[in-house]
Image (cartoon, rainbow, N blue to C red):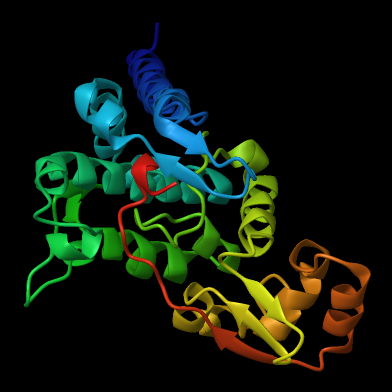
Length: 280
């Protein structure tokens, strides 16, 4: 038998084996984020009006093993593997990472909340650095902060302004933390559901006909520019209000008023207290 043929066949087999191994590694990650859904279903509580959620941090503090297991799995993902995923797999991964590592940050500092030393995630920072700039976890082969995920990854790599109602920074005025993980095969529906639930919450976003105002969460003030770039059809906050007007309006009169767009937009104060079940 020709030696070159044998060597070529061996090299082909080796190459195929390497591709198979790489494929196995890529597909080994659970894109259903099942463990995180277990964590969230255990600790997230829904309000009676089904528009807000809070977190049972005391319970999370007693049993953090599943959360740690999940976050370790996230930290083990290589940048090279991440690049092979679909866009929705990548974005789901990053949203869940932000929410998961936020939960871990609160867990690691829960004793301070219990003792009354701190009341808000903002109190976990310092005069020189905010808690969102702390590099306390590994993601995609490097040390990162929560701000890195939100501002240097998600807002740059994706054109999905609705993510601002999916990222939950552990404050009372934040959008509701879902009791399930975000997953690629229903990501668009989940983001739409988040926006609908948030805008329909009249403690977070309100209509004042007498004052001729729509008062939105401060989130839309901080990130209003993301709704002005034409991304997903939003060229202004008015477009956002129009798209979700049936969720914002409580009655036909309010709906007609919104449709006429004869209103001013202002923004509500933000309640930074910890989104613990004690604040229900």
